Length: 272
Image (cartoon, rainbow, N blue to C red):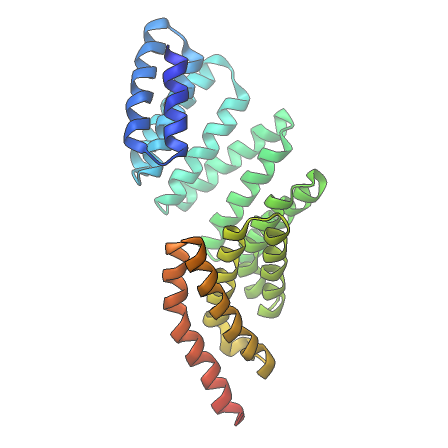
């Protein structure tokens, strides 16, 4: 019964029905404690941490993650410790507690290296890159992203590759120039499209448009590029409406007048 309730909790969490997920997780936790099943008690605490993080209460999530971490240490579960430390790092990231997040990710990475879990190493390196991005430590971010990208190539992980290419574009633009950053976004979009993930491809496009708006003056778009930008933003608006992607649609509607301003300013500056 305890495992069945735990599975129901996971299913409801995946559906975004977090109150139902939490209720089943709490029932499952009580049963595992009654049974003295420390391993599944810890896994359930981890699930509760993830539920609270999804609900936006990352401080409470850390409380549950730390309880799970104590159980993992008690059981000598090194892989479980690594997974939970990564979750602790993500919760600290939510709270903009960069040093605590970096420490948790570093500990997690070392344990995943010890256990030989390369896919998880890739994920933690990506998370470390995000931490350095947030602190504008661009070279450190690129180092982490490039290591993660190399692992994606080794694993044949095209989805992970697309995610990392998009994440590393900001740091690349700051260090190596925005033209190179645009190339990374375009690679990410192509990979998303090749995998048939239309929504992820749309999100990557929106992020590219935001980058162009933010750094347009530094990029100096050519006339044909301005025409293409106009067209692709309009196409993305249509696609967002078709997919029912409300968040992306809202972002595009915010970006559209800025794109107009950007392209008009270029036309006025060049007399075109």
